Image: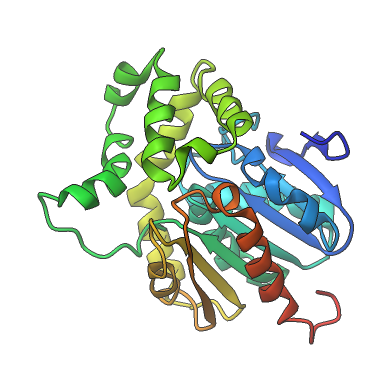
Length: 289
């Protein structure tokens, strides 16, 4: 990774990659990834914003959360860590996958601090459509991890010592062009999730899914008023992200990123940056943006 990006540790043991200058921008990755998931867009973002790419609690090099992996708790810890650094500055918040699980309750609890929310290809707890079992083959391929990762003990039994095999299968399944996925990113994830206890800490987010869903449905009783951008990979959730976001926001835009699977910032970084920058530019009526 480019040396000019600084790696630091924030409150609650949150690891952050920091770079750029300007208004603050928070980037939260998903599972099975780390903050490096956004590194292909660090450079263009840094020309306009000071970015903070965070490892969620228990993921990568961040310490496990206190009081559980439900996303109301996790997002509160992460918000406190960021607020200590940015002080009173408003910021943009971006989450992908589990990062979006975290970003929504973060915005719901701290909306007055946040200029906009962007969620990238994620089944945010509480807002998925009802499922009818048995799932179709296509749905099962897209959603298997929600059930498997939430099981007690079995995921650890089957994946222990086989983290590379699991991640190889997972990234091949969920990308449009697996051969073009950044190899250095993949190796970073294999290394991170092969550490003792790392897979368990990732699974815990799925084991807390039901609690997170209940929390989110309660938050959604007061819809977000801040601008929300909802983007999905055309070969993954796609424009369905817009409908999902309308479950909790009154101000949603977005759609599908073409020729893209689940991992938007790595599969189509240029398209993602363009959509993000255009979205934020549309809020220029506020001079602090």
